[in-house]
Amino acid sequence: MTSQVEDKFENGIFWELYKDLERQFQTFLEYVPYLEGNEKTYSFKLLNLILSIGGHVDSAFKEMVRFRGLPKDPKISEIRQKLQRAEIARASGNRPGRADFTSMWELFEVFEKIYTLSEKTIIYKILPDRDTHKPFEAIKNDPNSGWWNIYNGLKHDVSFTLKDANLKNTWDALASAFLLNVIHEPAILRLNKYGMLKSKYGDTFLQKTLEVMLMKKQKIWGILETPLFIYDYEQ
Image 1 (cartoon, rainbow, N blue to C red):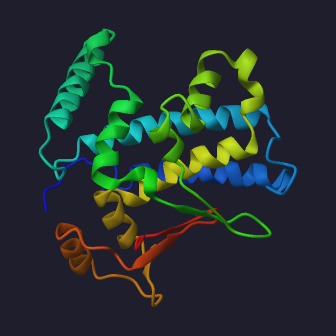
Image 2 (cartoon, rainbow, N blue to C red; image 1 turned 120 degrees about the horizontal axis):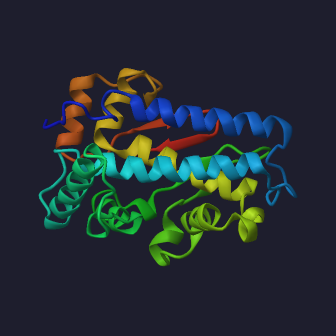
């Protein structure tokens, strides 16, 4: 299985970054639980959290596109070249040129083709009942809608968009970050090493068995759960 030596999903860095975001949101929920009537509650803490989540998703996409196990595709090669030129510019103390800017929409399109992100469902562990949501569905239907558009609005002009930094939008943004951290091939292998990936029978997978399943593009008959989310790999 081809892998990038310093892949930040494979070595667990992105999962640790994600867990910190989830812990921050959990702490907020201790004071303002996600109950009926609270969905539109907004705050400066949620504003800062959405900005952090948006940055995480953007960075996660860029790290994912560097993975050498992806299918050969001219668009992937183009994005990699732009990222490399941007890295060289930054290392030289220069600002990357506009031609080397990679949009979230470009990255989303790449992984929509590979993972059909817009069709993936996340289970939200909301009390008193669990809820389901497709965090990337709105973005596919309209790039200027959904939590990503809200993130950009908060980033560029918070004076008019502060009310968008609410519980619902934060939860949707965090669900997108969660999905990227559990669906990418190196991430799956790392999370299995952590013992987090469970089969439908409650046991863990042998690493070699999982590697073969991923190589053959087979569905994984398992789930992964955190305090806030559940992802079913069989969908």
